[in-house]
Length: 227
Figure 1 (cartoon, rainbow, N blue to C red):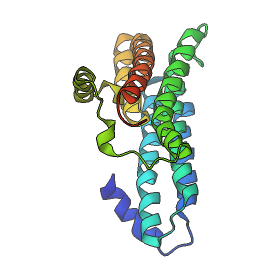
Figure 2: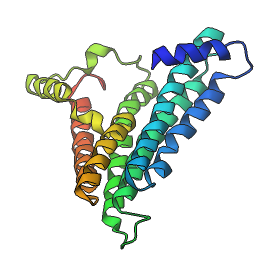
Figure 3: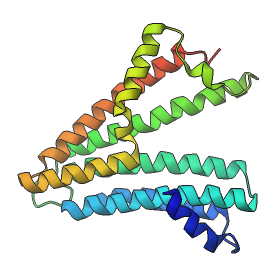
């Protein structure tokens, strides 16, 4: 996406557009993934990908414009994190509502909406677990965490963390990756003739989110980040 964002930057650097305005627009694009996914069929899934890719593009552009114009701010960093939280949640909630067949001709099955919301909650909690390390260190007067401190102190835990990192299954609950998965599920649904694969994917992502929330918390507690 950097190849695209750098081409856009040249048209924005001499305008009055601010990095924070771009971040607001970025967040709106990410959140629009949720209603986009409510469009039935493959086109809804494609619209979800378009929304998340616009989010990703603007996520590149706002930082590049901030560095070029030297318009850095804590507010910008904060808004960027809020956008990431909301986008991940929007995609997974949208998936759950899509699986519930919200605008279908049959009965709405709210179980799938619940599982999508559960997956969204897990995705948010994982980000919060990471961000709260910085909060805890700041409130106790400690310096920001060093990368080496992220390594678990237990060799067994370190091996498990490396295995999870290699498999990268945890990335499936991130908004951008999840939106791509939803397209694959939508194509499979089109062939199968129902929402079986979308519902299966919703259940799997909810399980991954809950498992990852627990494992990530244990990983933080087992490392030196809170020492």
